[in-house]
Image 1 (cartoon, protein in one colour):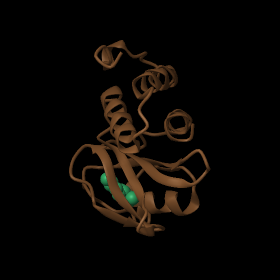
Image 2: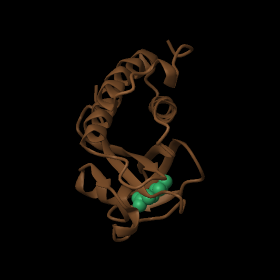
Image 3: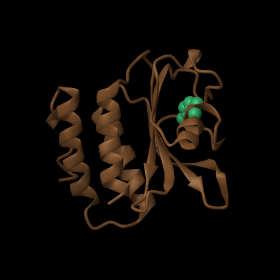
Image 4: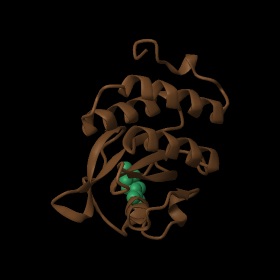
Amino acid sequence: MAESFSIQTLPAAKTERYETLLTEINAVLDGEDNRVARMATVAAMLAAAFESFYWTGFYMVDANRPNELVIGPYQGTLGCLRIAFGRGVCGTAAATRQTVIVADVEAFPDHIACDSRSRSEIVIPVFDAKGELIAVLDVDSTELATFNDDDKVGLEAIVRNAFAN
Ligand code: SME
C-alpha cells in the first residue's frame, strides 16, 4: 500500500481525492499507535497528494504549556517553533476549536509569517478520542484562495479518522 502511493494514482477531482486519501492513510496507519508516527505519516501523505500544499504539518498542544502550540511533524520549509493559543491562524483554530480558512494571509490580522511565500492557509483542530484538543493541522499554499469547504470536509475527516478513533 505505502509503496504504491503516488499522486498519479489519486483521482483528479478534489472531493474524490480526499476520499481515496482517507482510505489510503487509514491503511498505512493500521496497527500503529504512536501519535508522532501517525502525524508524520499524515503530513507526508497529504503533502505528496496535493501539489498546492506548500507547507503541511502539525502544531501540537504542549503538555507542559497547555496554552501553547509546539511544532510537530511537518513537510515544507522551516516552520516557527511555538505559537501561543489565540495568536495567528494556528492559535486562533486552537483557541476556538474551529477550522479556519484564510484566502489571503495578508488580510488576516495577526497572521504569523513563518515563510513569506505562503499566501493562503487552512488550519484544522485535531482532537483525540476523548474530544481533547491535541494539535492543529496547518496547510499553507503559495497561491491565494487555495482552500474551500471541500478541503475543510476532507481534512477534518482525515484527522478525525487518524486521531479520534
Ligand atoms: N501561518 C501560521 C503559522 C505557521 S506557519 O505558516 C508554518 C499562523 O499564522 O498561524
